[in-house]
Amino acid sequence: MAKFPYLTGRRGSQSLYYKRMVPLDLRGEGRPAQIWRSLGTADRKKAEAAYGAKHAEVEALFAKWRQHDAYPIGLVPPQVPAETSSDFVPLTPALLRRLADAHYLNVYEDDFQWRGDLWKKVHEDEAAFWAGKIIKLPDDDWNEVKGQQSSYFAYLMEDPILEEVFLYAVFRARKAKLQRLQRQYQLGDGGDHAQIADGLLRSKDVSLGDADRSRLMRKLMETEIKALEDITAGNEASFDGIVEREAAVEPPIQSVPTKPGELMSLLVEKYIDDTSRERKWPVKTINRKRAELREFLEIVGDKPVNSYCQEDGVKFKDVQVSLPIHRMCATFKGLTLEATSQQVSKLRAAGNKIALLSPLTINDKIGTVLLFFDWAKSRDSSVVNPMDQQRMRRSRSKRQGTKRHPWTIEELNRMFAAPIYTGCRSEYYWKKPGPQVLRHSAMYWVPLIALFSGMRLGEIIQLQVADVKCVGMKSDRASRTKPRS
Image (cartoon, rainbow, N blue to C red; front, side, top):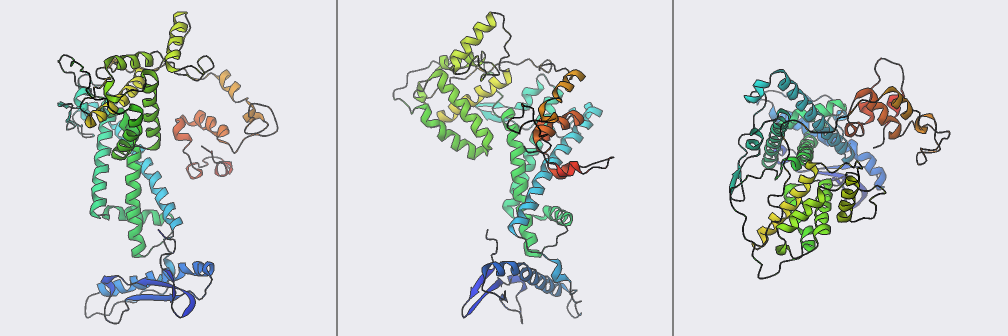
């Protein structure tokens, strides 16, 4: 969108002008179809500087006409105060972007607060949650997968864990909200965002004319849709394609395809492009899916997509279950995935403790390959999915995880005695002692904020200067320092 959409020239004049078509609902006897205002200069930069005042003047004129038209017939309408014209400011691209960014952050904050409030209510009355009184339980998520009716909620309820059922209910509620908002946007129904727009404008001490306010409401709807899509996409991998309904059928006999299919390596990018557009994956998800499919190619090899079989799926899974969490350390650097898996098996057999990938991570990789072959099968019926029945079974009796002990005072003292806090050479050479204390670096502030707040790393690195306030002490250091993520 142009920054100055109504800036134009006029035949016979060297000056630049502000030209605006009068909306159809404001046209009438004695009123022009177009508004022309001279900007008093032929210099483009000077005209742009005068543009805002003319825009506000025309918006004020339109507001006056609307007030006049809305007044009962036969009565003399009151005059619009003279200062009204100076109250309006133009909705420049920079202002529109700032307001949209503020709303994007508000959506994230509101979603976080909403989840927290719901979880608190669940803790206070768990029975009400299971009765569906706190949040609707997603018992209507049945859909057809491979010819069978499947429901992730029903799968969870076979051996329910409160946290997992709650998170899935939140996910479904958020997705329903996103779908309602997308439908309202398609219908052009932005009434619900009028109050949001007014609140943002009050917070910035800004007034807009009707046309600019309508444009802002439309932009806020687009921003909220984008924010909800980003939040939903972050959870999609946890619930997308996880449920595999067990069918008591014998495995099909794999016949040799009569005609070779396309090479898998040639189809990967086509699959990523089609599916990312359909599911609106963020860039991070796209990169992760691509890397996981490339791991499959490295382990099994690049072949026609209809020549893979169950043995290939078993080989991929066997390698994944033996891979270490930290694969880039010196011990495994330069090794292929298969060689790394073999090396880990030897080291563990010799008594070395090496942490392996979690079942959740392995299932995520298996799920990515499984969905790729489902997509390939929709293009070529001779394709057999090598990852069928290959998911790892996870215990659902209790939450699994590594037990973490709190830091001791001695450990904290050692960490905060690092050159970052006592003085280092530079941000690049932060391990070497020197004269600089990195007070304007995220490396300095993130550990301190984590120590005193208990926030998660992902929450800390998203902080802005406006989020940090000084309470109970006289210092402006917090307002002058901004972590750089």
